[in-house]
Image 1 (tube, rainbow over the protein chains, first blue to last red):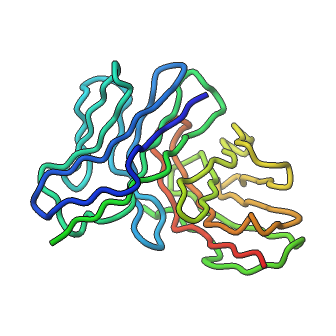
Image 2: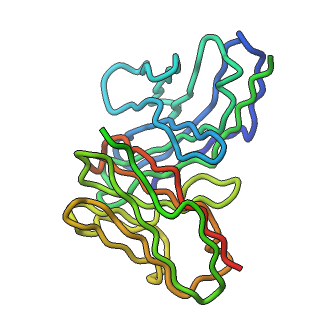
Image 3: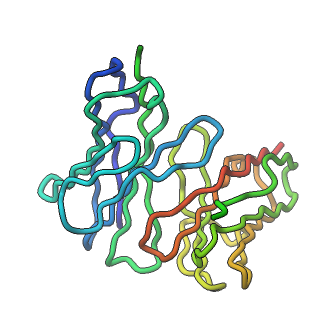
Length: 115
Length: 112
């Protein structure tokens, strides 16, 4: 069965500093990987995805993520954090060999960017 | 292009009642998924509909059921509500099972 771990409940970073939100996954086939962000009282917003190809994926709002197959990781990064990036971030995985099973989301990481 | 919409925004029910939540998918999307998000947790997959057929189901009991209509809008029905059903219910649409999903704002269900 597929699963996702986000080892940090909370990440604090100063504005202007680089940020990393960690994600590791487990699948039986090839992974389809996604990052979503959730602002208070809102639904989830799509940031970026990895399906195949270049291991460094660029997404919305200056975010990027690096796929590492050997470490089964898909960490979210941004070179310079903004206060407005403060939100709840979810990593999700879909297993291409698991027909009928949908996205599995991690528990979320709360990012706080301090001014 | 119209985004995913859900109704109602909030709902309060009592234990044992039944509830129907509605979702309109984004234009051009034929796949709708439903998720339950309890407070402080990630979304949990309930089920997915593709072209009016159930296309996968998570670990939820049969009292959670759904429908998808020819215009790809969808309903989530929950019978015999329990206190633990209190959560944010999210609908997401996509143009295929493996593509990114676009989420609606959710329906906050409170069961008393």
